[in-house]
Image 1 (spheres, rainbow, N blue to C red):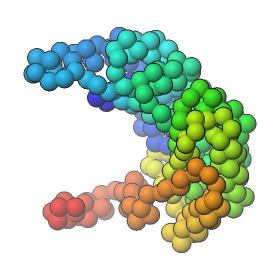
Image 2 (image 1 turned 90 degrees about the vertical axis):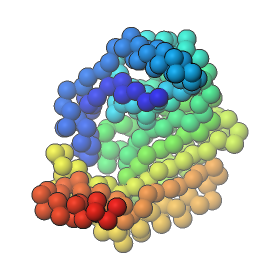
Image 3 (image 1 turned 45 degrees about the horizontal axis):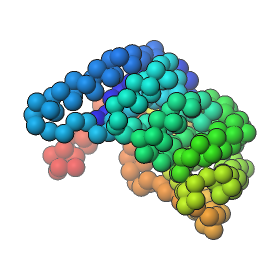
Length: 265
């Protein structure tokens, strides 16, 4: 069962449409969320089906949700598995980590987005590298087995030095995992091309050409190939560039979209 616990985001990262499409950050009260779960359980029981076994909490700003401790306490009484969207590594509360461990989840997702402090500042996600490392160490010591990290390549103003800092950050995180983490834990990097979104400050920024994106990705994969416990994945570049076209397209795409539907695409 997926529940959107909040809508919008107060952070206003320059690459992300959420803050600009939903400029007011709104959050459901814990009583409303727990009520939705109870209502779904009643429906399932009346239909002769098992009750809800897992709940996914959906939010673009999970750690900015103002009632997170109260919500975690309420969910803790339901004896269900709880999954969450990615969180800000510098703001994840103990209550959420405790709940994840108790319900059996072993992977925490964080989103540094860029490898260097300079580039994170440029995209208005000014998290210090030391904050990322301190937060990751805290998560690993707590007993979360795997870390998943979201990064982008091809961001406006990005240089090879930013990519190199991403690589060095990953090597340091890998060392932290081996030193403080659960044995056998993985560091999973999801690295994808920057896609400009309408209504954002970066909406007219160009996408880096595929050849250059491939060069950056290959450089990262080669540099991390022999680093223990690190997996690097990325989405189809073809899909990413289609998404880029659709994200800024207007009426001129209507014929293309109708033909795509006609052909079952």
